[in-house]
Length: 299
Image (tube, rainbow, N blue to C red; front, top):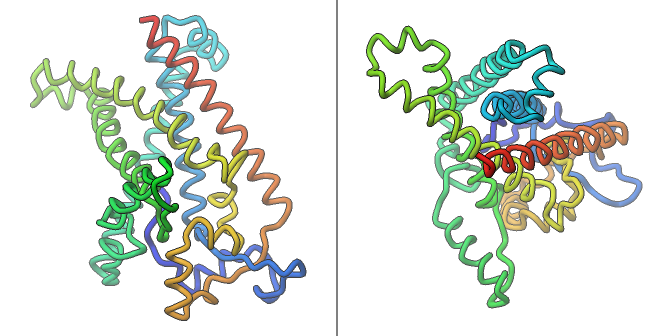
């Protein structure tokens, strides 16, 4: 998982710059700011890669009687290969999740970064998120103006915690199934059967959520369509910054820290690669969503 909620420090900012020279030198007159550090971006790459692998193989196993699942399994070498890939992706994603938890604990306990638990840079929901939800619905209905968001909008926090708790539920149940003889020593038979149901149904729910709600929030909204490359490049234009995180922008200006986030414009090659990867993942997710939902309905 992306190491979200962690303030961009000076050394991380230097790593996040996508070119040499002065960060304020922009021929077009537009300024650019760091939103995600290199570590956050790479963790997101690992996360979506392993999740896509888990979804593709897991849904294939879940709907193994469907023709598309059988053809996909044969293409990869059979259901034995599908299961191996599924377990491999599970281990990699688990290691990343444990690193994320360890990193947060280290920053809070050792470095004293209490802002990870509360404050504008935190991923923990607060009263402002509730106010933003109400304000957004009022805006949808034409009853008020569009609310301004801090570093993380309420739907970004919802995405984060949905994945966080999904990792615990799906991950634990998956390992219980994987090491059934061990857990069978102290778990009753009905619990092992329940775990199998929980794992399958929660996985379908998670895949459906990511491939619909998350993709819409991240890429398919009118202000993001057809692709938001910020999570890949880590950089956001000043115009986007002011529009999407107005409260954070004003806070950094008031604190005199806005210049700390200045960086250079993303390389064109990085933007092209980001769009190719993004479009590929979104397309694959939508195809899996359609196949799994149709298979689920036909059961």
